[in-house]
Amino acid sequence: MGQTRLSVNINKFATLRNARGGNNPDIIKAALDAEKFGAQGITVHPRPDERHIRYNDVRELKKVVTTEFNIEGNPMEKRFMDLVMEVVPDQVTLVPDASSALTSNQGWDTERHAHYLKDIVAEFKKANIRVSLFVDPILPMIEGAKAVNADRIELYTEAYAHQYPTNPKKALIDYKDAAIRASELGLGINAGHDLSLENLRYFHENIPNLLEVSIGHALICDALYMGLENTIKAYLDCMR
Ligand code: PXP
Image (cartoon, rainbow, N blue to C red; front, side, top):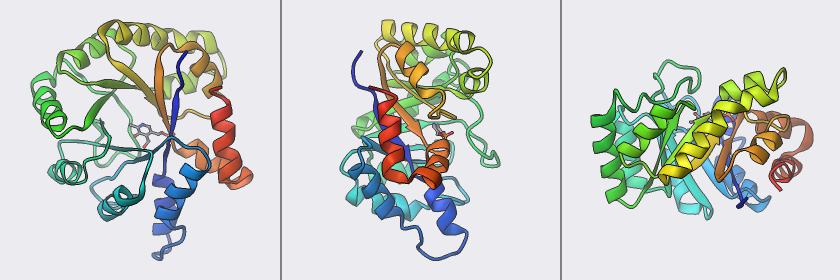
C-alpha cells in the first residue's frame, strides 16, 4: 500500500472567521500550521456566495501553500472556472453541488454530463492542473470519469461514513469495487466527505491505491478538543 496523503480542508476556519468579520482565525496561518503539523495538502472549496473561503483567500493561499493545493468546486460557475485558471492549483476537484447546498451532496453523473465534462477536463489539463471528479462508488460513473479523461476520481464517502458504525464491512463493498475498477482504468483515487477518526483507518486499510483523503469538518471539530497539531497527527496515524 502506498502512502495516502492527508489534505486538510480549511473551509471551516473561514466559516469561523466570517462569523465575526475580522481576521481571526487567520486562514493563511491555519494553512501554514496544518502543513507544519504534517498535512500533505490544503483543500479549499470556494462557493459562489463566499460564505466560507473567499475567492481572494484562494489567491492569497496559492502564494504560500507549499504542499499540494487542491481547489474544489462546481465548474458550472464561470467565476470558479476563472479563479482556478488564474490560480493554477496542483489539483482541481470538480463537484456538481448546487450553490444552495449546505455541503457537497452528490457525485457527478459522468455519463449524462460527458460532453460538458470532457471539454472542462481538457481545459484544466491544458493548464497543467490535475483534474479529479467527485463521484459516488458506482462503476459506470467511474468508467465515465475515465471516458472524459479525468486524472483521478474522488470517492464521495458520505454513504460509507453513514453506514460504518452499524456495518463497516457492508459500508465498504461498493467503495472497494469502485477503487479496483478505477485502478484497472488507470485512474488515481482520492476520497472525502465525513471521514473521521472513527472511520478513516478502516477505509484506508481496505481501499487499494488510495492516494489522498480530503478532510474538513470532523478534523476541525476534533481540533477544538485536541488542538490542531495533535489532531493532524492522529489523522495521519490512522493511515500508517
Ligand atoms: N470533498 C468534497 C468534494 C467536499 O465538498 C468536502 C466538503 O467541502 C470534503 C471532501 C470534505 O468533507 P468533510 O468536511 O466532511 O470532511
